[in-house]
Length: 255
Image (tube, rainbow, N blue to C red; front, side, top):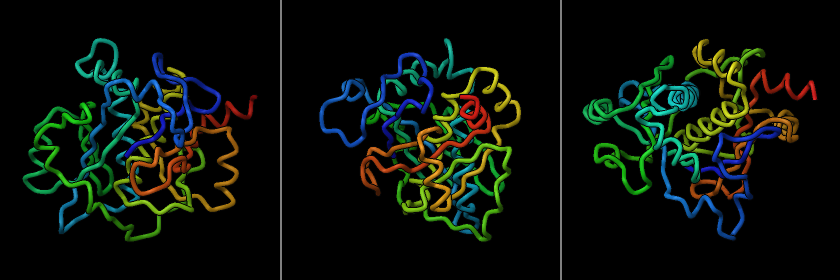
């Protein structure tokens, strides 16, 4: 699952991240010339106890943030070069599913497991697009169809919300990757102090589908918006997620 890694509205991406371009363009882009990496995420889906869809989306988004904030991903950390290479190219994320022995083999690989209310998602440092570890490459991408047994409650108005486009239909795996993209855009926009506060609070966030009228308000250009590159499921250039973080809302009000 891929997005066009746009620079968030009103801000800048990390040092070394190229300027955004339209995801529907046909001309070559400098990021296409760089070695391509992907961030693997694996969601645990046991037959007898699959996670709730919204919890899986939220857990995947938190997993991306946990990896970005991990000391191994920054400075001279063990994963730092892979993370930089990944962010210098297209910011790809792929969600695969595992259960039983598959999950246990995935847990044995370097990575971080993040647990939600019912979901478990393991995130791994970026790998070359054609260089997946064998135990991850064998896992299936399809089959991540999840449901919410109950309607999700209204999100806390003081917490970050990743709003999904109400006009798009996405599989759970696709939506998990898109939620991760939205969380990453919010992370890029925040100051170091704001990032620290979010991390120390445990990365609270919600993922919800916006009402159509609310979606039109959210996509007015004041908050970070994920635009999909269109490799799977949806048309290129589709707006999939708006990252609505309280700190970003306050910053826009001051402008």
